[in-house]
Figure 1: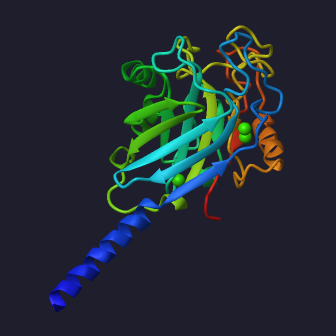
Figure 2 (figure 1 turned 60 degrees about the vertical axis):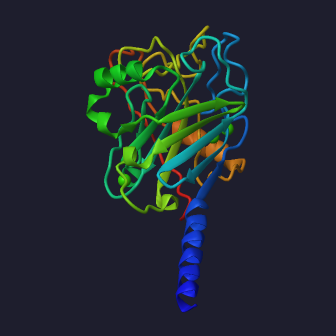
Figure 3 (figure 1 turned 90 degrees about the vertical axis):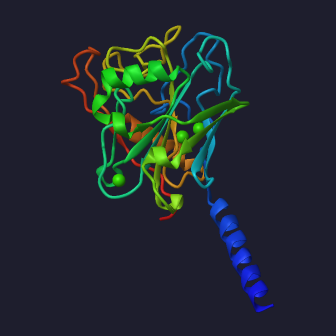
Length: 274
Ligand SMILES: [Ca+2]
Ligand SMILES: [Ca+2]
Ligand SMILES: [Ca+2]
């Protein structure tokens, strides 16, 4: 009888810890209508860039045991006209998982991360094939290659992209508390014909074009990021201005191949626990 009670208690503890473990879920919210980078970016004019496509609305990060599920939502449904897997979105999720890390971002993003938020891994969510993505990383971001992580599975559905990432691919062994990490979730646009130094992201120019965002610079100093989560990521209206201020603090020359006059903007990541 006593043994049965002990077994019962052990089973209870296991069930309870599984429930606790599976319940680690983080939610971020972003205000609507701030899909204009530093406040002045405009969409490309081609109708494939549907209004709201790049407007982040929310994100959840769920600990699923051996995997982490990242769900990023935005203001218009994903479309499937020309991309290998979907059309226009590229999402990068920078993770500050501990001391130290990188402050530069994937080439072509044209941002820095604040040193106190330096990142260990970035999840790269892009509609091109894995060989194409890896080829671009080898060519343009070899120094970051081991810290750029591709999801094991991506599901484009409705107004969202759901990406499954193996913990092993993040270098994690054993227990981890994902609510202690910092998150930099950026919305860009993907292109199969990027600039020489850009890893598959679409560039922002001074004036918008068929497939170019407008409101930035023709040089390389302006961030090619249309929206991101900032501050507490609770979706309050003041987060729009915080984003605009962060992303507008750049200087750019006129020549995209000459970066000597450029000063990149610096972003801060979002932390669930403060
Ligand atoms: Ca938004
Ligand atoms: Ca770090
Ligand atoms: Ca935002």
